[in-house]
Image 1: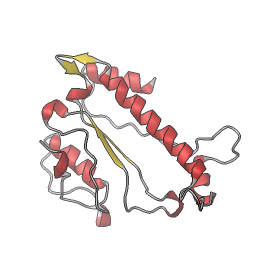
Image 2: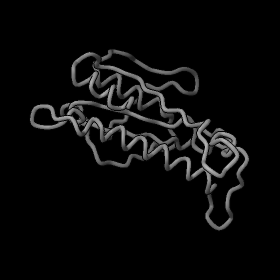
Image 3: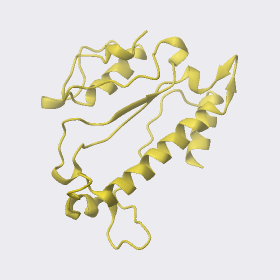
Image 4: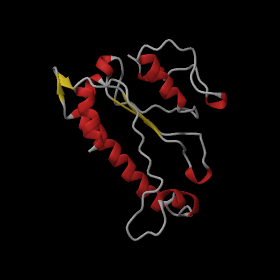
Length: 165
């Protein structure tokens, strides 16, 4: 419902910039006694699989929610395309290996073409870079004249140039 409300606010020009936080740390799985956050710290890595299977289940739910969120914007017709074609939506994780709160290899996602300013359908290897680069890129795309973004080890002045047209 929140996705639909937000997409309609954008479509009706009630807002142009928004921040929606999807926190699933307290999400639970039926038949599993711990929350997602606790699971990330306590579930051992399965030796055969090479990852934490229950954590993976939680992560799939988050990615499914992201896909539904993006699909909501794609379903609204606007001009010759969709609302998504004229938007730039970003998402990132606040950690990579949650068990250790690692910051290397953070997942970053984009959706929308921002009226043709952004390339889509790419996989970009951030090469151990901070996800702050995604926020910096978004601000530059929106026309902000800023020299850098973030603080300390999470400061950048480098765009994700691979996605720029």
